[in-house]
Length: 205
Image: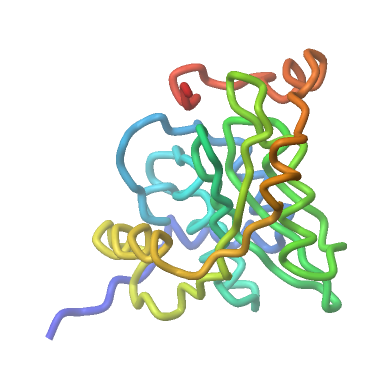
């Protein structure tokens, strides 16, 4: 029988500092944004100090789970752009989020939103591509990572989670007529959102 993976003492010393959504977000903000076409499980994120949005969301969900929250992620899906995955949590019945992103406006959200849709919509104006199109179109139901035993230590489990996000139900956020009426982001907003972005990691429409 295979021995279950556990955090080692060095890892636990770091994990003990991640005691809230804010400290988890600060950790993610302090590591490198990954432009590599690979998944890193939470253990590898901790080791390599590197993550893209999917890795970061799974890491954040695992850390939130250690602090008494369900390990939930939501996939925000876009057109002519990358998806963005966030870890969600609740406080006093309200929703917030922790996220790793290459863009300034797609990271932390305070737990002040009444439901997942309201939380997702807070990202809308900051979610745009290199053509300045507002690209967010739909979002998935929350995926509970509790069903993926050992995902904190397994690249294979990360692959399973990534695949699952492609098949779970989604909610569209706009009608076709609303989409046709969208305006591109202005230059000032565009430049602000791109502050510090790693060009290699930006989707090219």
